[in-house]
Length: 133
Image (cartoon, rainbow, N blue to C red; front, top):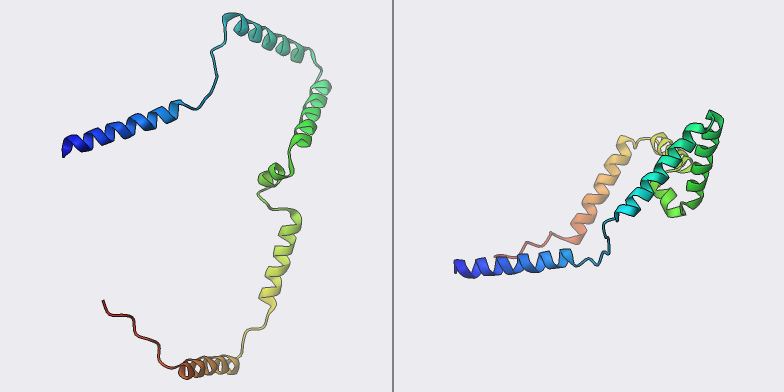
């Protein structure tokens, strides 16, 4: 019996790991030439950034932020805001204030509601018993 359980466990592990490795990704490591090219591009970008004035850097950051905002879809914007906007918060405040402004029921109203519930339960008869096991 133990051998059967061991064999089933090993088989499930083998199938699971096969599915994990079969994701179809074609990522290959960079060649030495590509690595050097990217390092050179990074160094050039750093040098260009160091040559910029603070005003140029601020303008670059502002342009990048504008571009990013433009590229975001409506769904991404909603996800970033947590589906909460100023209008929704304002409506929630108004609704909350209105619910608190409602007058509390009087003792007579509470008694009338209780009598109405009791009468409804009496008219419908006793509750059925649960089935026996």
